[in-house]
Image 1 (cartoon, rainbow, N blue to C red):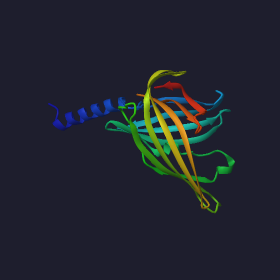
Image 2 (cartoon, one colour):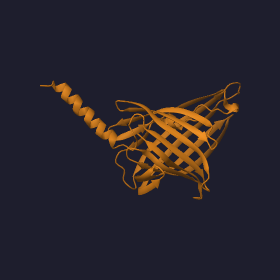
Image 3 (tube, rainbow, N blue to C red):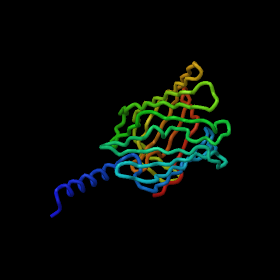
Image 4 (cartoon, rainbow, N blue to C red):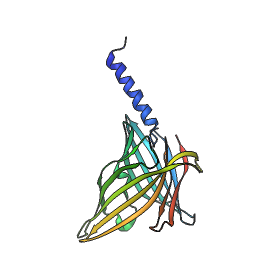
Length: 229
């Protein structure tokens, strides 16, 4: 007969795996996502290639690369995603600009600090999601002062929608997001508010996103164009 603790751990692992399977993210090691960005006229503007490098317990280690429309890599970033209880928690480093290859920023040091952005496994239209806050500090060698950007993200569940992209057809929830960025540089502060919508599917994560002007006009959008496990 198996010791009680062995049975308990097995049940816990099974339950945790089942919860992660219900998450709005993939916890499949090696899973790769290709997102293609477009401007408001539908012209391709770049790609984001994201891969789950490894999964240890309830933690996924993610690598993301951003390429411009000519295929040149401009961002290289890593962050983690946790599956905890009935939700996932996304490391705020997801929003880091990474290692810029631009010559003018080669000496920049970028520091990300902030909350994990939470996304429950069960979403309901009208639901308000927990606010996420963080700070991006950019230090440039030789510059007299650092640049600090304080970010807060508020999200509401709009509803359910079936979305078809080049990667397939997905049952999604649509989230409305308001992002406030308050930038402080050389004693001057400027606050900008951005508006977006994101469509998320279980076992995948983001399938589509759109950004808008304050008047509601579309600025750009992104689609999941390839997905493999």
